Image (cartoon, rainbow, N blue to C red; front, side):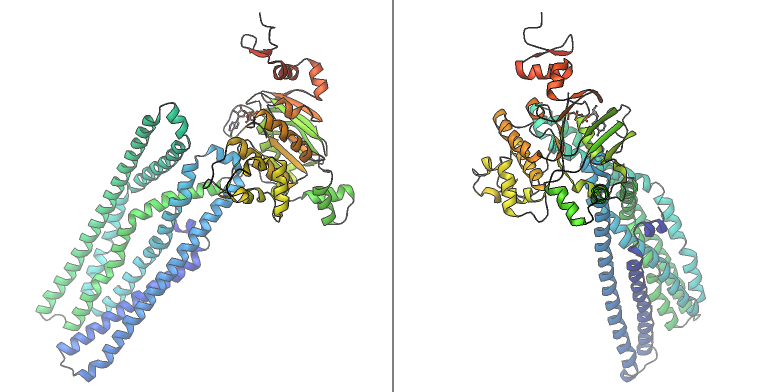
Length: 610
Ligand SMILES: Nc1ncnc2c1ncn2[C@@H]1O[C@H](COP(=O)(O)OP(=O)(O)OP(=O)(O)O)[C@@H](O)[C@H]1O
């Protein structure tokens, strides 16, 4: 990745780095001026026998230059710190924003630990490369050139030695650093795998303990740690070697200049002032080039981290979305001219939004099997459609598509007759209450977690939603009630989390409700009780509800039965029970305790098996 590419990726880098480079250069020029004054003062005092009055002016100027240099260095450090903060903030924000755009379907494919490593360690390393290594590269070119220009005017032979030895340093650097990128790549990969695996192990700790597999996992982590350690040691070896070679070359080169100057001074071929000035400048000529060596190791890691971060940023979202807003479509269909009124009628009254799946087929990225095949059904405005099917039938995939997390391979989803792809996705999602199978609660109180559902919701509204979702039942037993901090004061059960998710959905009051197994973790009694609240919440909403529990689906206006991604039946509960198909068997199982006949691979009523 070249520097141009970096500037293209991080536009904020250019002004900040230009300031740093200019200030560094100014500090370098002041260093040259400092050497000039020092050489003059020493020559005047020790060789020219000047009195104190004559050298007071140059000494004052020397102190002034030293002061100016300190200011320039301080400003440069400050500017570098500012750029560093900005880069870290910008990159982290772009990464987070882009991950939001990529959505849950992308995130499910990636290892969370690896992504966290890129967002935390990776960005730190990119920052070191961008704010330390890149300006140092410019410094390592500008200062030697400036010093050399002064030396050539002072002593041509020393200038020739500097010109001959200087290119040797980058040549050796290139030779040593040849394999360094592959080592850095290995090191970065090992760190990412370690991060990902560590998180997986922490998350799966209970399962590992139960299956007595924790020892094996510890060994795997040990193996990955070993790979990481080896790669780091290898990388450090290259870094030390390059630093050593640089030190050696620069010390030898400075020594050659010093010896040459000494000999010529002895033979009277150069005067003391010029020789002393060149001797002061020679180490400064090599210093910026030497500094590159010390940052070489960090720069390689920065490049590897940047490649991964930019790869994520380059990943195209599965769904792009359009520009149309729901309220505009509703206005054009109802003739309501006022934007506010249209929105109020959408959220407060019976939902005017209808949904249609038209011949939709879909496969997850990287999967060769279609999760959905030619699925067609409608959810009329204000009605509830239930999706029933075995595990893996494709129910959650319908929600992934409807929420715009993925795009159908074939067919279309329409909202009030308009293709979903034409809508601005964030606007569309603002009209949907979604309860997924895995609810995430954020650090904070129970009340804060519920209030997240709707900006500006009052505490009274949140408490009412919580009461409807039966959150009250367990919160009243907690010492701090609704201000109990989740994860700190209390650990919640799956069923309790599900109730909070329902409270959020009720509070959002969106015209469309998407519930994926909303009561799967509740006991029978709580499920029955929540069912009533659910029906109240869904009253007049356009709802799509997936459920294993038949109690949840039976009162739906329409039931769609899915098997292996295909719709096998659809109709009302009464229609399907009398149709004698899959639904009827599921219903029989639910009511009569029918059992699954493994030979026939179907449910049969109890006693029917011979
Ligand atoms: N992220 C994914 N990548 C690849 N395939 C997936 C992904 N998520 C689900 N699938 C596959 O798609 C098919 C449908 O899965 P889906 O989650 O929609 O089923 P479901 O009916 O919701 O199951 P459950 O009731 O267990 O939640 C399954 O075969 C599953 O293996």
